[in-house]
Length: 545
Image (cartoon, rainbow, N blue to C red; front, side):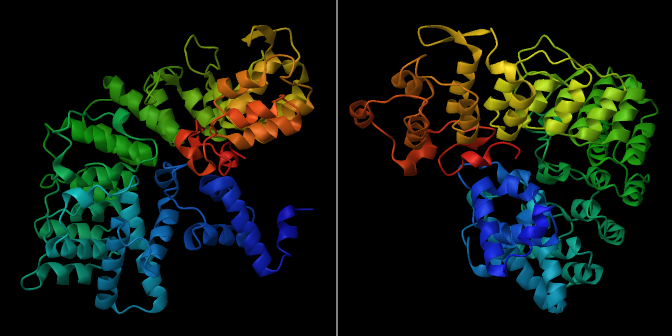
């Protein structure tokens, strides 16, 4: 029977408590991915995350979550804070609160209309600044001029042209058509990315500059146009942009065409800004806009190999198959190495596999992408899928290449307990093979190194699986070696767990002699596994499942 159907029978209070416990156990990022079970489950998950806020979105164990979750969910979190009075020192909250109050007075909406407006305005701010805007506390004096500009921005996001007109045309209006607020950006770019053609036309008629660059920093910070400076999860309009790029990202072809009219078009010398707009369209998956902008150059994409390579990378990272096909049709090698940021260049198949993008993996394999192995210092696509816990992708790849071992330890190091269990069942000989690995005072079976890896990532589920498969460290190395090699002094709880399982023997005198880190300080000294700082509270946040 479907477990989702069974849990639906719980009384409302019990059901809510179960969901809260689930979120606390698996963390925000995993919990968000669980929302598809059914409508009630989804609603309770969002209530626990956004309203109850059982985990802080800026929890020190996962500071990256704020930039990774959908802006609509993040907006609900900060919108609730604005209504409840929490987070008064957070510039998200103060701006959302002030803009919504002002818009409410000006529009006199129904309660349902107000709620919808509040969500849109909060989402606009959160999408604009996925990494937060706390820096503005130090650099911006929030004066009446910026407040007025924020209110104008809220009206633009809502697509309310009469309100936009009243705010710009009122006597002694503080808001200006070309002024930029750090919370929303420039009015024209904002209208372009949200697809409000009527407001774009009005703003241009009012004197908005289609060629103006938000933040005025792109030409001064030493960066160039390529995607290598773009985070894979950051919306393109969160960076300094002109209106053309904002419209291209949003896929608003009517606004793109308007901005390409001779009187609004960028200078013919602004080749790099056109390239940026093409990249934004590629990121959004808007093939028609990509082709339109490329055609304006008078050349084919083959003439711009660097741009073509960057377009291909954006298409792979964001799962845009049509755009990827355009790059392939333009001559890019499907096995070309793409820049991934912070490490060695990797193949498109590696990227798709690490993201668990089944459709893109099949797309690339059908076009004869090579699985490897590659002569690199990084993982190959099979190992990439394994480390990230994408079992279905792994199975697809293993259909194309014979298994040659090594994946169990990769899954262990990624903290992927579910995948470890699957691999143990499918390849049980891997932990009892003849491979030798240096450990302690000599060479020992590779299985013992796997157990030590599981201990290092502090995952009791994986440790239990390996112990049940017959592994132990008692006869291989002493407890002191394990504790220090795996860096367990900040994690007394995992040492207690190892002793209880019989994995190690620890003399009570030695146990008491260690300078254990207080549990409340564990995160300060913990290792980061899968982008999670692991502690007794957070170890289950690691891994896909």
